[in-house]
Image 1 (cartoon, rainbow, N blue to C red):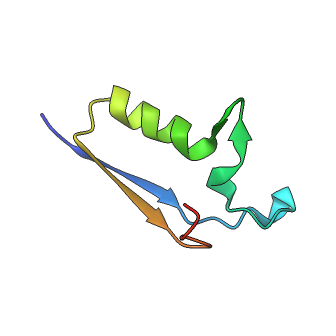
Image 2: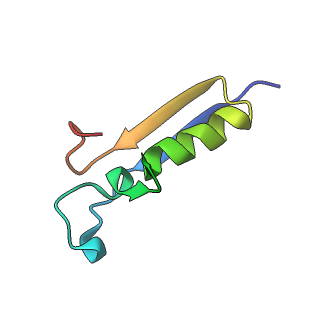
Length: 59
């Protein structure tokens, strides 16, 4: 069975007190978004769609 992953990455991250989109904050050495994308790939997603909002040009 093939499936697509949809990652909702539109948060501002205001509680993080940063101008940076939430998904670009690092966990370890990688942005949060990379961790989620890795999980989607390992789960077998054939296609990944990222829904970006706040400062989407950075995502």
